[in-house]
Length: 549
Image 1 (cartoon, rainbow, N blue to C red):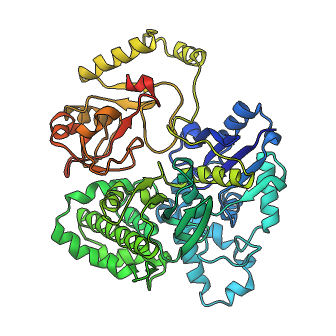
Image 2: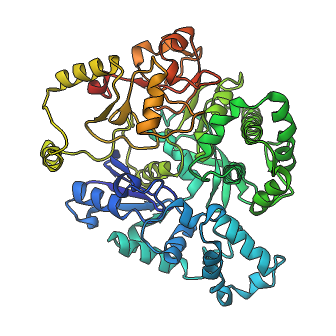
Image 3: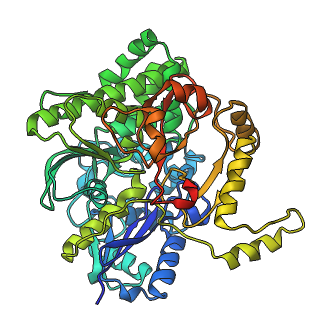
């Protein structure tokens, strides 16, 4: 009998993963199917795809279902918001479009708040402000209630089990940050000893964890309550600058190099007042994370946007390196793993791996909440005492058959002409078109999982000429002028283009390097326009022979 584990994340960027006898056979985010960027909510389409394709439509074949939501906060969110998919705008209130409607929806639950909360230190007005700014309460009310209204834990498990189509006894809730940590173990040798860091906005009432992973066991050394949150601070800055939090943080990071150092140091003092790290590696703050946004508005209104971007980015880099350095020195463990949404900040990760204290480093690919199901699958297989097969490439999504493609092409044959080529001919044609500065779209094989386009569902152009960026932005991407594009480079040639003295493998576009002179000469369009850094995909022939060709 097969051990079949299903793992779900149904919050921000909802995702489903499935493993059979320890091997991940599918990993797919709802956004890829419903076309809603960072889709929030129940991953109905992704779940149906996985169950239909791999289980012949029969969810009862599943051995364990891991939901990466130990306190079931997101189930309550689904009950509150409804199970239909939502955009970030609809559920994350800093940029909520109709704030009055949002408040009315929450206020109708006033009579259902437990009296213990109403007698607490926070006024009801403060309580509502916390909800309004963060979308949920700061503190767990009690062990049976994951949210002060709606349902008990048992009822919530029955609710989600019924939606999936499995027995409630198969449901295993798993801690958010532990899932972030364990996601890395599907890629690396879990028999080694690692010091693991995860940090994000919030999950299961925490915003960061430090743990040691050794011999299959996770020893939690430090847990940071979400009332202090570096990820939430970056999110608030993103929203303050008129962009979408939980989506456009990369734009803030991309603008940061344009700021002048003296301005960065001046503005950074605001953030240094908000969060500090003590000598033991613990975050401290006098300000509740629910108040970050108002604090920023009061102190940074009318400040130049590039100065703010540079300040929050430099502050994040300094906090990350200080935090990790302290814990390496405390534990004596220098082989580190990084996960959680803040670790998507490739510039901060660059500062971390450049530290002399770091031995080896592994950054979980696409380590936002879309990676939670990977950690959940690892945990589910641990419960079943099932060994796991390592992930190499990330081409774990959906795939179209030739018949499906041909049937679709017939529907647009009045606008386009088509030619069917062999794989070798297609590779040669694509290379020739790129050398002629044509822009091509590539849809081949299985779709890649995660936030990075890794060749199979990608728009490609020649990285030698800046004019191609203008073409991409004018007709397709509409990317902000300060934002870089990124190169795919043959794995065997990667050291010609990146400064990589530590010989770090970089196949997932999740680590940034200094570029070489050859890169600045030959692929300038794939470097950061200002600081000339580079975030490559090393294309491995074994993982993707057609793209390599």
